[in-house]
Image (cartoon, rainbow, N blue to C red; front, top):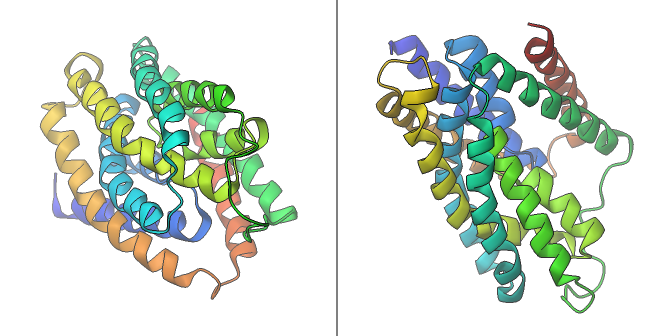
Length: 265
């Protein structure tokens, strides 16, 4: 890996962290396309490296939510076990795609769904203010476990953190308050992200064409993690100071172009 690639990876991590801090999106939608289409690595390798970065991101995020009193034991107890179990199923499922380009097509469909999700937020900006006291009185706990399973499969299959899947499902079907849903997802990632990353990276010698893929994935993730941690802090600090709605619109346009690259080539 030359100096240019190293700088690109740090900048990618910075951009992923910045968008995550500003828009609340998962960094994988930024990192994976850059690794595939700019650095020139295959889809399996890109997802493994992105999952490693998610490990670095999960811990400080969960600690912030815990400090804010939003991590509820009863929610984590229902959500985390199924997430941890099914992320392994998701990784297994991703490894059934022997051709990385086929896995890239699946990721492209996910990117297209994220475009729609982002544009909905442009048209109808979400209300970030909590309404009333955040309690678990109305929560459907079995539904929380089901959402955990779906989140685990998606995270392992696509190499994402899972919040983009779990948060809307928890708030809609399990009646979990928004801030508690975000905190629960972050807390569960402390367990699921390392396990999923370990399993995906460990299988890279069989799935990836990159030479020395395990070491290369760890190195790639380390460069991106440096930028991601700093970018997340900057993004969080800019919240409320920049026109988030228009940033979402531009970001949706970029995601649309990237999804086209994955789907069409």
